[in-house]
Length: 336
Image 1 (cartoon, rainbow, N blue to C red):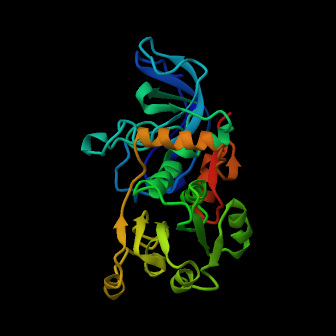
Image 2: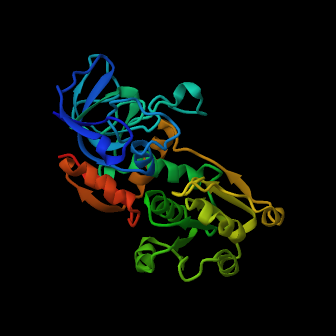
Image 3: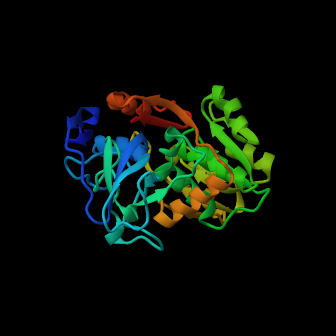
């Protein structure tokens, strides 16, 4: 089989594809024939040496991937050969609150999914909804769970309430879809006017161009009466406008703390003194969160948005395309 491994932190040059022996499962392990993987921002941070957690040298990258089980250990009870599965981002975090003993991540401290055959402990995996193809199924582990917990984690928004999303990356689009699934109204902020109609097609009730209206917060608040929940993925460039757009008791889920230039979030004191908004942080979620999200995806037959698919041999090109930033949805690497 062939696998990619990370040797260093010098961008895509550290991605090394090599021939390896197909793994054999230990008693509680499963072997997954990986059919597709997908990229997240953390994956580019890892190869560029800017990720907060130091990756293990020689690690197989990528947390997100999907495939079918082709071999199981003799003590496996959760799965059977032929089951369609994906891995859980924090592999050892099953439920409850995370702690220092549960921080191992696929594609960082544990071998991930950018390989033809991945080996996982049976506790690290979950079954996939039947209606998803491999490319769609490979997008859920990181961005999907992050968006799910951002929308539902602080208490499920009530139907009719306003949710604001920023951009057209994986987290933003998943958040838009989940908010609509819950009956909310959604404002989508984008810097690309050409994406407005696509955002409306996904269900956005109001699309705002940050290029045409850089100071969009007051206008959004005026048109909506105030945003109840902001999924803040813009970081320093948008945080102040998100705060302005929020209702008095709004909730801002802060997912991005720095921008590509290294600038950090700054709290405008005078602005925050006029607000009683709650600001919170999340980081992906547990296996239980992943399972809850997948039940919703299955029940509502939700389809993740895929921007572009690259063949396995062009993984480095997929990374470079993702890093240029002008994407609408998920960038996928085909493994079949």
